[in-house]
Length: 452
Image 1 (cartoon, rainbow, N blue to C red):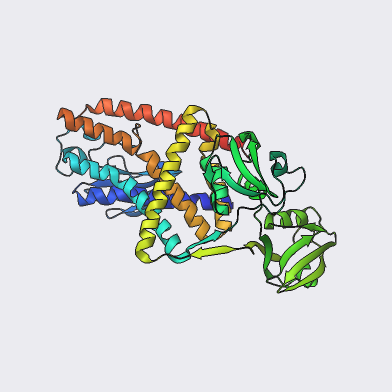
Image 2: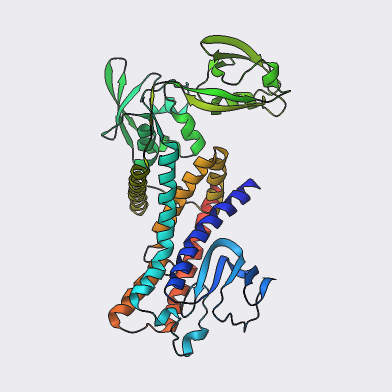
């Protein structure tokens, strides 16, 4: 149910922001916006100045007289603004045999049409920029100043890749790395589809480590456990009353050192041990202040101990804060980096270096990531929202029928030939694009289901 809720929230925000851009630009340019819809298909309910709030479809001969009908429609996979005199997702062509009116899209100059079409993409970019700015200004960035691996568990994915405990990573595919964020970005993001060639400092020797891409995990949970930075530990944030954690004398601020006589380095490791040892008393060693304390705890029948546990970094780190205007620039650089990464990934898909299903996600994947990011806090959820908004902007501006980029190409062609392309041709282009888009969406959803 949470998947459904967070998917609805995420898509609702992105679609509203995008369509509001089209709507506001159309209004500012003197065009009529007959419908502002979240979702496609059958009208569930909506409001306009003439009929007020109503359920179901409006009469087929309904004339809004320039008033917008704000509605929620059946299929929550997007939305649209129906601008008078424009062939769009509504496929309404009743205006085709009528004289163009001054308030219609088709009667406006090219520059206004371009503004209206590009406004949705611009709003998605602004949303991403605003969130990136806020993250830099209000939160800053904590830089984990290590590239050393704390521990490699025998028979783990990292062990099979050739890593050893205490390895210090110097470079990845000839890119020098100086902190753990750079290590993760290079391994899991920037080198997608590529084999890895690492330089490792092991004891006093420099070792070349070559890892085939198939050995690199591609799920978020597996990536978190793949390599553990030196200094990472699970720590207790809060202990609930009348729980196994309280009975074991565990306290807020305790840092896990060993659990079940094994070193633990991440929250995920601790949770896995608790959930697989229900009702079993487990020895636990924690760091409390400067003292090492030995405890024991018995997870309940649900595999939980009743304590909030999170990962903290106890090694060297640097926290960077940014001023108001610097944060604006940092937000811009974040957009540039993520845009470059997106096009790089798309290029690798076309080259066959990355499977389509791993590069693109549909509703199920969005719901999963939205929920997991929300579980980590509002900051994490907003950051995911910014990435998705940026992706939506990039995809929408591509020159494909139905998308904003497709509309833009038609506008430019009409501007060059100095006349409107026949309505039937536009409808045909829209229909073809819509069918291809539906088939692509079905394929993406199919891949989402396979990955469950």
